[in-house]
Image (cartoon, rainbow, N blue to C red; front, side):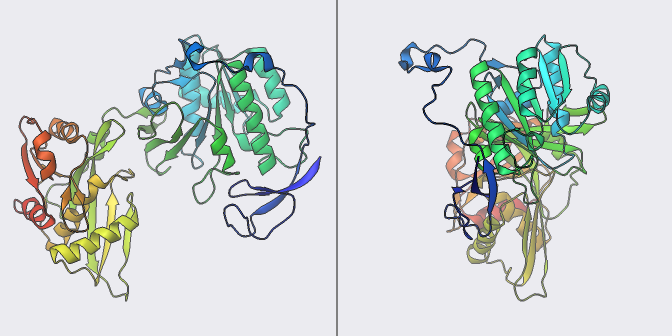
Length: 452
């Protein structure tokens, strides 16, 4: 055993305490921990199986992915759970992490897969009550309440599961380390041991992680670097919709999202999120625009709302929910300089309805159109969608996969689309939709508001 200091922000290790972390620059972030010292020179027990081989001689397993039957969940993972992977699931308390993974465990156990659910926060009786509420009662689902890592590994060897759920990693401890469960040393060492177990035995392990007040997973960031996949639950736990997003995925795309609806029987898949997000939209409302956004390969129509009011402050406020506020500042400057709209004495508030986060620049034209609609008090026609990237010169730039976005809009009854002129040539024709190409921001605002 020896004493070392670890940064709570980035996991940097130092043999002495320092006021400022030399790795990430955070002040007073180094915490003293007692770590276990391993003797060098010991041979690896699986050395014979880990010899280097030519890549041409390595054959992937035929059953490398296992589908859970929950399509939104499989979409996030890239098509299913990869054997031997370590997956971290984070989110606010009460948002549905344990509920979702218990449903995944039941879905796999019903398909004759053995699943071990390790709860460090509930007794097996409490877990049983939650399982009954969710309808999870398969004999292939094993429950145990344990926090000792050595005992957990022993249970894994006895049960030989196809999937292991650890709820949560902050409650698990390794007896050889004297620090408390949830500390940097415990979280890192327990995750490293579980990583080796998953890779060597060939089954997947899910780790549930708590989040801090800033929304990051508690513990060192090195935990996110160790695992294969990091999933985040987004949304307000006081509302019914939940968004599951992959921020890291070694076996799939990080652009996909899964949308669920919380109910008394657990989380239900939302098969048509565009229809759900637009179900409460009112026609004739100023400052409201529908934008076809792209999440991975799936287009989702979202409503962007803008509210512009007179400001009595020296510096007007710019607030945004679901959109980067720095992008809002740029677009407001373009509106003032290129469209002649006076916003220097007005507060601007932007909201993406439904709790969705929009990061792609294709929503730029929708944002400026919503602001202009509210300023001029002219609504956008209810059957119109607007999309395009806005440049600093006021030009409208092309976006990717335009035809796929417009087909989704036409499916939901939209009959008019204002798109960048550079995308007009790639559109082969959307039945029942009037395509209006624009090249400048003034032209786009004129076309968007003329029918309102």
